[in-house]
Length: 152
Image (cartoon, rainbow, N blue to C red; front, side, top):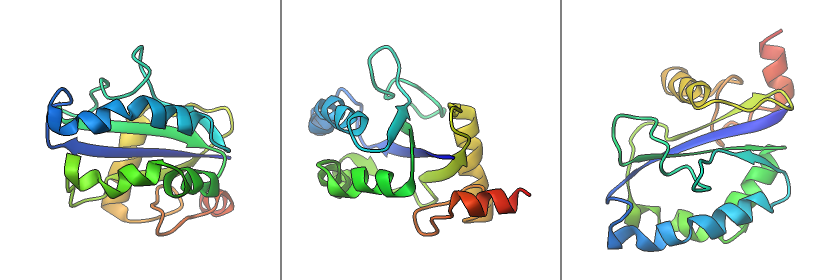
C-alpha cells in the first residue's frame, strides 16, 4: 500500500500579488525537493509543473496539493525534516486559517493514482467522521494493516 495525501490552503492574496511572491517563487524548488525525497511516488501537477492552477473548489484562492508516498514516515521526513518545514512555519503569512480539517491521508493500492475527486471525498469523509483507517490525519497515523482490517 502507498499513502496518498491532499492538503488545501486558502491564499490571502492572488498568486500574482507581491505579498505571496516568496511562496510562489519557491514552489518549483520545494516540488523538486519533494520529488527527490526518499519515498516520493507521485504528485498532482499540470503543464506548468505544479497544481496551483488546478481549481478544485469554487473559490479561486483555494489551492490544492496532492501526492503519494511509500509511507507516513517518508512523508513526515519531507514535511518536517527538509527546507519544506520553513515554509510550513510561515503559512500564516500567506494563507487563511481553515477551521476544519485542511488535509487528509489515506491508503491506496500500489500503482493507483488518486483522483482529485477521490481526494475531496476523503477530506469530506474525514471532516464528517473524524480520523478512521479510511481517512485520517497525522494525529492518528493509521497503518495500512489497520486500513485492510477495517475493510475486511
